[in-house]
Length: 483
Image 1 (cartoon, rainbow, N blue to C red):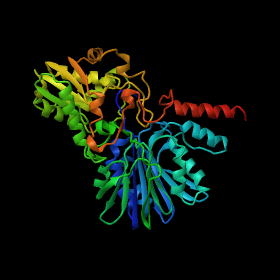
Image 2: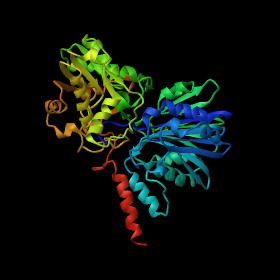
Image 3: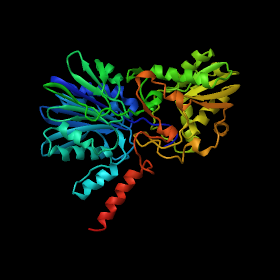
Image 4: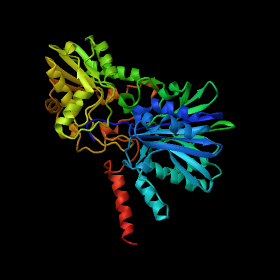
């Protein structure tokens, strides 16, 4: 789990003025958001209050065939989700959107993030007789909304109440029989934006690149703590939970988001170039060529080259047909997987002093294999520069950095020791101070807890990736013994 970072999740929603092929639009958007989750995906469609949905494990084009999209039919609303599991594991009942049928109507929800009090919420519901089908924290959000809806005038009013007691990261899209609702946690850990098509349809998405894909124009970011409701009477906003300092995950700029997306007014591409510029200023070294590890290291390498004056070059050719699910059954298999995914352009590397830029080092094993490829290609020296600080602490908000046990920065006492382990001549990381400046003046604050241990909200003292699901299993087993 620690060989590399994994994406979080991606959500999308659309509200049309009339009945159209909204499933096809959601499909295109999920294709654009595929980088955020490659484990599973799904789409739910609303046609005059009647919900249809299809979801499954796999990539968007594998889950959605032409027949599946046709069966979803037409409607005036749809929401979609691409998933990488952080809480809940690979349970088919965890694949989103979750579709709930309750006494006041239908509801579908798609969620990006991770709740830090998911176990406590679920325990409370199950002790009250609720029946859960999966193990994701999204189901706890759905139950919370339904519970509050019973005593509320509207779903958005219920959501406002729910936001009082769910804690952690959540960028969500909810679809009811008549409304599309998007809401974001008060710290704004993960992005969520609002757009509009030329035909007048409103869309919400984790990233602006999906808006571009469906021909929508970015209107603005949905504010941290904001609830945006789209209905036949137009668009409304509830900002009662807004106002706190934001805590956007800084890795959206460094790694997660697509470079052509814009987050809080900042181009992700330019933020990564800025990271390379800062790296060159903080950690200069004499070399002949600057290369980036595809894909998220490329922009930072370009920035390093521009600032240092050292020529930028192509060092690796990436096989675009190898996904993250590639089977690696043995040590030799894992070594082979790196060679299949990346191949060195030897003509650019042989006999040269190389600066290799990557976005992060997690466990260090994959990095060591990549360095070995450069050595075999004839690199005279290999100097690694990382466009983020060292990972030293777990993430509780939707990224699978969940334990210090496998992090190389926690196992090694010094950066020099890490350099020896991965086989480079020198190693340097971007400073925390520079990381906070990547988005420029438009960003009002970031979460860098995985680097510093300082989190924007209170977090559990201990929570491994599988601890939530483990607790759920233990909880269920305990009550089965009382039967």
